[in-house]
Length: 301
Length: 306
Ligand SMILES: Nc1nc2c(ncn2[C@@H]2O[C@H](COP(=O)(O)OP(=O)(O)OP(=O)(O)O)[C@@H](O)[C@H]2O)c(=O)[nH]1
Ligand SMILES: Nc1nc2c(ncn2[C@@H]2O[C@H](COP(=O)(O)OP(=O)(O)OP(=O)(O)O)[C@@H](O)[C@H]2O)c(=O)[nH]1
Ligand SMILES: [Mg+2]
Ligand SMILES: [Mg+2]
Image (cartoon, rainbow over all chains, first blue to last red; front, top):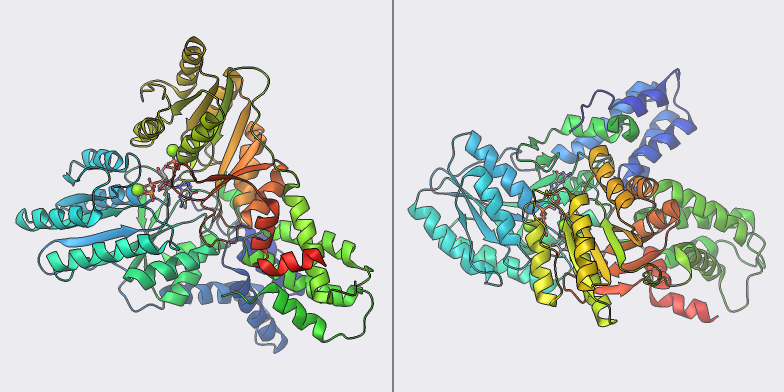
């Protein structure tokens, strides 16, 4: 996690000494937005609207342009029906199921969220719902040890639904506050794997009605336009209630999540900014949008 | 979600009838559509810009062949150029020369290095090589065990690495062990790292300085967006990568990162990963990926024949 001092560097360099908005400035802004993975169509839409406003003389001040764009992108992110913070049920375990394509950071995020809940005094249990990938169970067990919390696991190759079924029973009997369910990474285009996910969800809801309370989709910040397809297909299959954006400690901006939020009205809960236990932050739309416009090379210094 | 590029180009050229040649103006409008298609496919902004400039030059003044509409003509030129840039001939792993051959995998976190190490070992074993898998990721929880499990499944030996030994030392020991046991191909699986993490990038440079590497494969996720160029450029300038592996290609990503990475590094894309299974590794086919980046499949084969 680098400091965000120079985040607005690129924007400021662009606006330096300019008193009026010109075509070059608009083109440069379009480039900044596209390069942040916000998508060519969204970028062109935003810039076209700005261009129209300039023509109609509703906009002439470069810094007002900057604010307008930021405001619009913030609106994509914040216009959702759900609470941005996780809301725990009145009683019984709070069950979070973590899903996403391969290698985005699901298991690591679970380790970090566990730490967060423990810090706030909750009891936590981890569930090894990835029975497929080599050493996935061991990986989660190490996160369990780091957090000093129990990990419920079956053998590799077991049916993930049965692990989850058992785990929820144990969680209820032991009055565990928070249950974090890891799932195997899967390509959103693989129907059989999406069916498996639906089954896991059904089994949970049967064992503990109302659960899973949160279905968290993890998106890797390096992801490009495919992020939309991921969100759409996972949402169609099981209904996504929150997002976590990982690997924001790199140089990618993760702009695709603005489009995901815009289209699917899903709140972003957390960002991942490293591989360690405390590298998780609450998502802040203002900081995120500022960073979209920031100079990557400056940020990495 | 995306309107097909060929439909859009037909739209562009519908407006201009009776042109025997592709003129600068009608090309310019077509190229705006091409640019949009490339950006939708995650081709990097600057790479797309350069590409369009090159193709424009090649297209202007070309006679429109009788069998093709102007739109198809443009697609043909664009596709040809893409295939050429993605790398005409299929490249193989370097197995000749100094033995044992040592291959090092490198890339960002979660890109698929460990899985690809297993797949590659399997492929090479089938070719009669004697691979030795070397876990050199001492950071990620259970990374060594992950490779051990793959080795067991494949019945391929795995070096007994432990997390208390520095990766460069692990590689040294593994190389010695391989010489004793007559393993002819070492595959070193390194930890995922950010290109901006200088300490960890130095770790790879240290391995490279100490061990005679035949190949350094940069493993990248096919779903990567605009930043692919930044990452690939840094790995390549630090390590002088010898080839690229694009993973997770079986999904629905358009795979523009392939062009971005190829363009910035100039290195061949050697393999693509098309699944989690240990057989899911293929050699790279530039034509297929070019069609995919343009968001079109079969129409192209028709145009190719014309
Ligand atoms: N730099 C960085 N690396 C991360 C972050 N989150 C996870 N990682 C790393 O990304 C890699 C993959 O993380 P995992 O947690 O195993 O991902 P996963 O989604 O569970 O992967 P599968 O279960 O194989 O689908 C590991 O090397 C993690 O250390 C992050 O926020 N920043
Ligand atoms: N769908 C699909 N998944 C793949 C492919 N290649 C690897 N994976 C999966 O991607 C995830 C990450 O793969 P790993 O091999 O652990 O990646 P890595 O680069 O070694 O990760 P780190 O060591 O944490 O940096 C795992 O779930 C793999 O099964 C592929 O071609 N297609
Ligand atoms: Mg996992
Ligand atoms: Mg690995």
